[in-house]
Length: 330
Ligand SMILES: Nc1ncnc2c1ncn2[C@@H]1O[C@H](COP(=O)(O)OP(=O)(O)OP(=O)(O)O)[C@@H](O)[C@H]1O
Ligand code: SF4
Ligand SMILES: [Mg+2]
Image 1: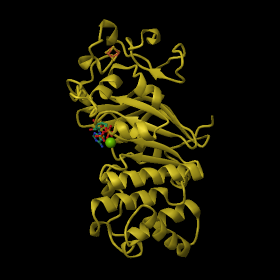
Image 2: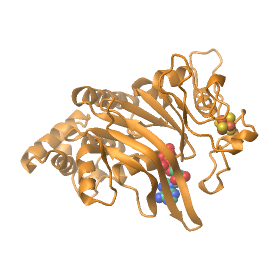
Image 3: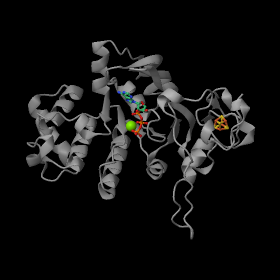
Image 4: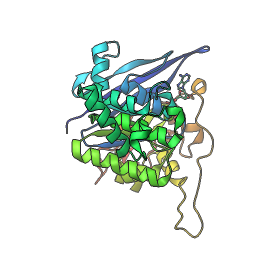
């Protein structure tokens, strides 16, 4: 299968007053055309910084510290302005916080038209008409009137939808969606998810979909990558991951989901917290919370392909004591 985006051993560095920290370490991921890759993990595990590295929008003091990213078969050069334009044309991003990307002094219509123009090269007149259609497509009522509104004049949910309109304007090959539906109620969430699925069918868009909502991931993702403390710890087809989690952290995430159909709600949160950036334990960062930890876990487990596991395709796990004993990392 061809890949749209290919991330190899990506590391991100933040320069903090107390010294550098590495919130993303050796992350390797790919998304194929028409595929949805779900990216999950607790708060602070590096999901947003991975997304921002892909689209080239890391902030001040934050930089790529190693690894390679290719987009549509060509390596990405973060310092090349032409490469930045190539990514703007081919990638759309939905940010976790709409106000961090909407321009407060431009109307919603202007911003959607601008995004459309950048991707398609069409005239401003066509882009303006298309902007109203896009606002309508993402479920903004009275789109012609709302197109003349500034971001602060509309609700958080409408800002989120306007940002989705900008992200999908001109049909980018890759959509990076960082918690795209958090500010929306469940009905609108369902509409947005359906809209993204339709775009995917129609134009073969690939989606990198970040969410805390494992139920949503189970519904929409083809494959799922689980991140913990800056690293991918398990990567598998969605159905396999949910049926047979093989990393203790993945199992912990699934066990902490409520099963409302049970008489007694089973809900077992993972004890403890993600270690802070400056206090990462040596070896496996999950060890302080892991009931399978042993002396071996003081060495970092590599993300290892599980070719011996019968019936499961393309699963990788980083653990010295995987749940399925036949697949332990070397
Ligand atoms: N600009 C920054 N300066 C300092 N620390 C940062 C910065 N950006 C991110 N971090 C830290 O890097 C780590 C990873 O952040 P990131 O935003 O990628 O997490 P996340 O997985 O997206 O979390 P969430 O689910 O809460 O959105 C966190 O510890 C975060 O506090
Ligand atoms: S490597 Fe060890 S500590 Fe880490 S998840 Fe596996 S068993 Fe637990
Ligand atoms: Mg985030």
